[in-house]
Amino acid sequence: VEGAKLGSWTIDPATGATWYSDRSRDLFGLGKELRLDAKTLKSYIHPDDWAIVLKPYVEGFPDDTIALEHRVVWPNGEVRWVQSAGTAQRDADGKVTAVHGIHLDITDRKVAEAELARSREALHQSEKLSALGSLLAGVSHELNNPLSAIVGQAEMLEEDSQGTQFEARAKKISAAADRCARIVQTFLAMARRREPQRSPIDPNDLVSSGLQLAEYGLRTAGITASIECDPGVPPIEGDKDQLHQVLVNLVINAQQALETSDTLDKRLAIRTSVLDSGRVAIDVMDNGPGIRPDVASRIFEPFFTTKPQGSGTGVGLSFSLGIVEAHGGTLSVLPTPAGAAFRIELPAAEPVDVVLVDEPEHAAAAMAQPRRTALVVDDEPDVAETIRELLEREGFEVTVASDGGAALMALDRGDYDIVLSDLRMPGVSGPEMTGDTLGSSMDEFLRTSGRPVLEKPFTKTGVRCLVAALIEA
Image 1 (cartoon, rainbow, N blue to C red):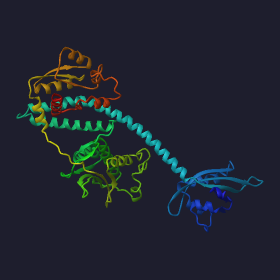
Image 2: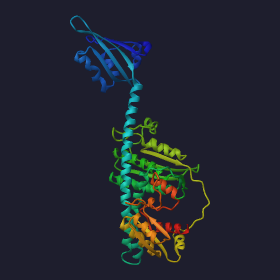
Image 3: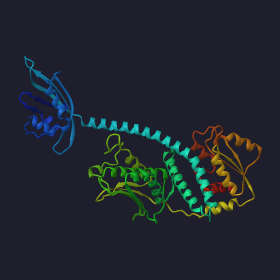
Image 4: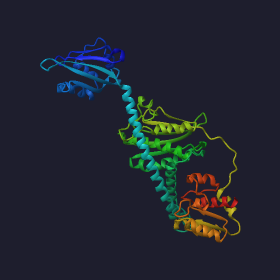
């Protein structure tokens, strides 16, 4: 038994006299000279499991066997799992005179089972998030069409009302529409599945748009959020969608921590700065309950969580760490006297020589040509009408087609200087109009088409710059 790393034991139920082998004593964290009885054993067995251990003795061993799994608490506070198996010995009258058994340390197995359960839960949550992402992407696409009309019409209204009593109201509508558009674009970007795309990012813009996503939840939770942006912070090189996910995850974690806090003045702050090393730091800080040292040392481990069952999978911070490290950065917990603070540290983008061009003026110059023709293809009448009005203001003669089939007929009748087409339409879609019917995905089509793309909801300036690019091409 000892050679198999099994402990052995014997108990007299009548007197409580107990004998444990050296191996069993080791499994329980018992000293070699410690006298054993029921009271002593109870102090070493996890309080929540004592009733499980006691049950066979109370019931009189109806099956003559014991098969238990329970926890023991060592003197240093460490919790271990033990499997206890035993057989009751009876006299001629059927009275139990002794119980003999073995002990086996099953801590590693229990840890593995817990990890497996967390992995399964994480997979389940991942599937739910994937479905939610698809739903979110669909909702965002549906919102983008009316938002395109609202943003475009609001900008034209603002332009037409200059110097009138309606100018201030038009600006408010335009600002609100622009805010909605930016929120929807950020949601769509986070839900979109695609390969990471690196480009220069303004850290201050990243922080502002990220906090805007969580603004409603923070406000309804009674949390005051603030941003301290260093205007001199340099751009970083990265995938904006992925870094958005990291930032939003840290903000949501802070919100959840603050919601469990008794603090009346709940505050969250995000700060950008340039470190002495030249790297960019984004700090997310809160005045919540903070992070215990033993938790801080494991907080980035996959599936590690201190949240209740069903409230978290423990993959968020691990996932965020992977994203930041893939960007050549670090994600760490900062020491703080109160609350919690996380730091995203990223390398600044390499400086490049660029020629600055005023896009609106550049676009205006490109379109300051003899009257041109444009074909607009969109199955949403309000969107098509908005684009038509924007182009007519720039001197274009515009034809509108409600689907790809109508557009192909229009192209058979004449030539156009530019064609602006929606991608997803009933009947003949945008890619099918170009002859691409075999592309495995819309992203693949966009990558291989070589044509400029304007995402909805678009602005007047965005349309002008797109048209200028098409004309110059």
